[in-house]
Image (tube, rainbow, N blue to C red; front, side):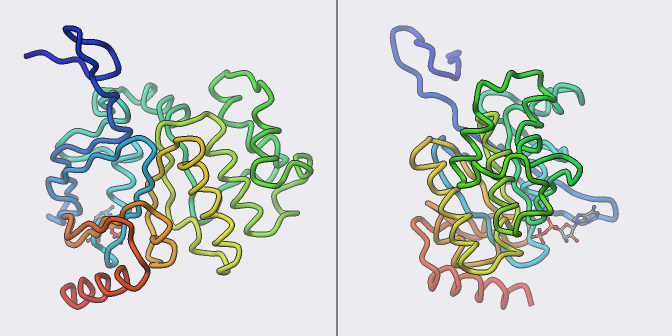
Length: 256
Ligand code: ADP
């Protein structure tokens, strides 16, 4: 039977909203035969915080790149909400990345020649969306309401990462992808950054997919997913640092 995804009513029945992110049979192989991802199945519901872990070379970056539309899988389907991103041409994919996806990287990729406020406004500007006060609000939300006119270089590493989070949230994206967002931060500053991501999920219903190698960071997520050799080795709900550490140690042994 044909069933539309989305919140529409089909034959008088409520159909659940689509997951924020869906990977269906996603494989990615490179020339010379490296298989970075193998037939991955993953659905991330809205309002969920997922940590992606695994030994080096297990496919974490490839997963993030394919899920975020920065790379195309060799086979399989990636959906952001109800959009099959494999069906989009480059222009539409660029627009999707700008408007429906937010990014927070380890090195925050702020534009040094722009002010802090202009950096946060950039995704709106590029998309032709009006700033209805959300840049100022976004900066206030990350505790930097008084730094809009400063240059990124005038801020500490942790403050710059908070600007990157404000920028990732400004378009109210479907999914926020974070790649080792605390990798370059001291524990206290990392705590602040994770608090903001957690709040974006709990208070505002955002969806976060975070690649990390840090068990303490992973423990902020609702679930940790462990990759090994391009496959999901195991998943852990409500991860605790000691459990995460144990699983990582075992996977590391297996990989060695
Ligand atoms: P992780 O992020 O977990 O360290 P990656 O996703 O970067 O893992 O890599 C998964 C596998 O794919 C590794 O074996 C890696 O060497 C390989 N790989 C990644 N990118 C490329 C590429 N551009 N060309 C060839 N092989 C690659």
